[in-house]
Image (cartoon, rainbow over all chains, first blue to last red):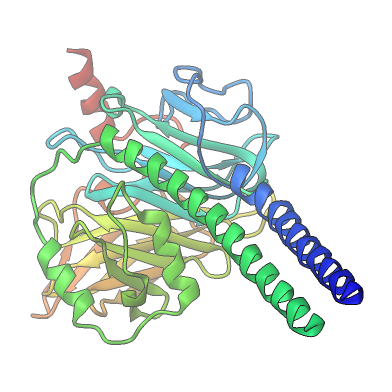
Length: 152
Length: 239
């Protein structure tokens, strides 16, 4: 009987230990993915601030209103939710893409006024500025939403 | 007895691990869903025209070849608020171009950009045009001094057979329309290098598409001098 009780206690400890290991594993493997990786808004606050301090010359061509990451970041995708009010749309004047830290475009896509939202550029940007820019005030009401897929 | 309990413990561990992981994944998905819903709420569609959408939906659903799971997964990135895709119904429309109908009835497309990734877009309306195009400009390799190449993908009405791009260096590149979509890769090409876009109808007649800026990028973001349509827009805003 005593031996049986010891075995039961031992098996109980094994069971609890297994549970603890499982929960720890799940927490360790799951936590980073849930907290950081995914679609995030490219921050606003850089509008009307063409990044002419770089070699990128917006000159208000496609770039009077710009949202961009404050620093180069790793992004695997970028997408743009934008609506074009009927009758005011204009082709080729809204873009999303990546700019090198030293200036100059790596890749960009044009949002076209016939498109339904979102426009999706499934290109990995590497360590670059993620940028969306648009020329016109019409995209500020409602405001276009630029998102990048954070990989870290 | 001990063996049974240990076995039970191991099974329980695996189940617990799977459960906790799935709850975390579900939480992430729910979080993404909330973000998307928020986005959708901000951007209510203002275009009511369905010009061409129903035809393209029919073109997608009448195609039988299913896309790989990897390609189908790209469509998740084109969700809009509660509107989602049935990833098991993503179709191959032609080489490198795929289509699916979103739950809000919008036909959406994904065109691969060679080995570089892809471009996704959804049709709101043909806006009265015979074709609509979307351009992606990308360095041929990851260097700020590398030459650009341009990928142009698009959608065509039923009576369009092919689309021809004439480039500044004299090249003429023609892409056929298959299941209402076309896609072309223009190496050593950047905005302004496409001089004309022409469609050939199934009747055999051809027509140059104007204004060019509706079909191909005419000015790079680094360029100076806004295209005419942008200048008029600016004038409109200043009133």
